[in-house]
Length: 274
Image (cartoon, rainbow, N blue to C red; front, side, top):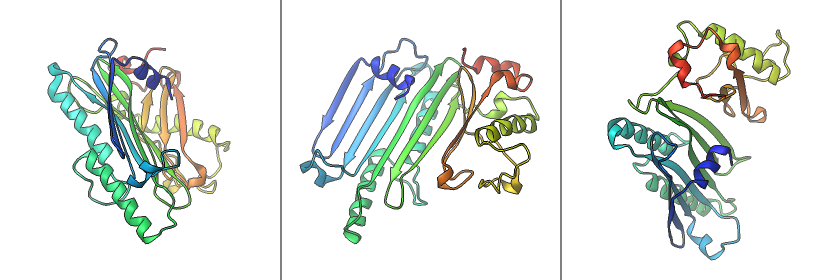
């Protein structure tokens, strides 16, 4: 559990839980002090029905944890952000049309598992865990981290991590182009590539694709999955994004000192203080 999660959990005002044999729903109410945009953390768990009689054994289940923001003075912007969180949680790892509600998506996951074990009785347990965490909550920045871990059969489980950022007063997303000056891409790519090669122990002239990566035309390209921390800018490549499963995810941290001249003056206030 990271520090932001501990801070949220340690500051709860109340916890309400509703339980039955296969479902639980919990809402952790957080204090308004210290948060620009107040929110509650909603936690939902659904478990495959037969597991109710076997509580101490591994069990097929789906867990969803996410914040729901509330700020009457910013209702339109906050509604937009809440809708974006819901849309992300409803995204399917397949190409199927996603259900209209989080609860319906959870039910469908268990129904798909039950169908799978009828066809393949030797099917092992499934799991699906989706978590949205608040990592920055300031007057000009609301940053979220979405973590997804799932296993639905096959050789191995899968996981992903995605960051996204909003202006809490407008609800509009904050993108790299909002941080960097015009024409930043070549310089940022060069800086990030240096860190990438160092992390992978590759020389400056080594072929990326021959090393097992999937960069188009063998040319490094930074992505847009970034987070702003007190120490620098983080870029995160998920598994399968730039290489096979065995390579795994890649995280690059670029100190702000290396980005001088690239970050807009008006974007400096978005960066967390050391």
